[in-house]
Image (cartoon, one colour):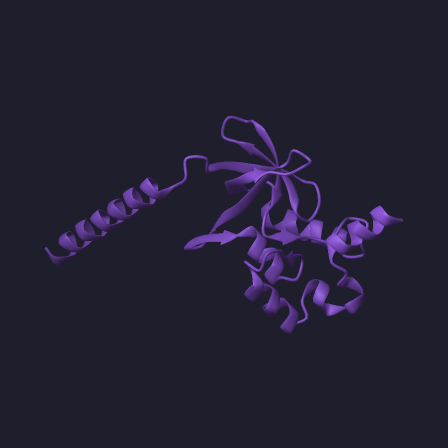
Length: 165
């Protein structure tokens, strides 16, 4: 008898939390599959209707492909999300007409933020300070770009330097 009520109670809680989560979900949020990784911070995602979205992941800036660590960052992002389901939270459009978005992915008991994961592993730099703890962790443990001072040129400075030359 006790187990029957316990199981019923768990089901009620799951349904309640699921309903609350559904009510607070953003209307423009969608699911899709990562079908292509352009570089360390830009991907192509096919939504459930098979519409292709070119997405620039917000909150991070990965080294450019022309930088020494650029190809490594691209491979890290491929390993993390290529051919996997992602949740897209749109945040606007950039000057290149890419969708700016937060990407999340299911992982064990919850979701991971793709930008925070990339930054925490040292494959990208935090922008705007949202993921400063992840970047501090990567710096402290000398992960990715933080393993070698020669790899630490910020992508935005690299792009500016290339534009000036």
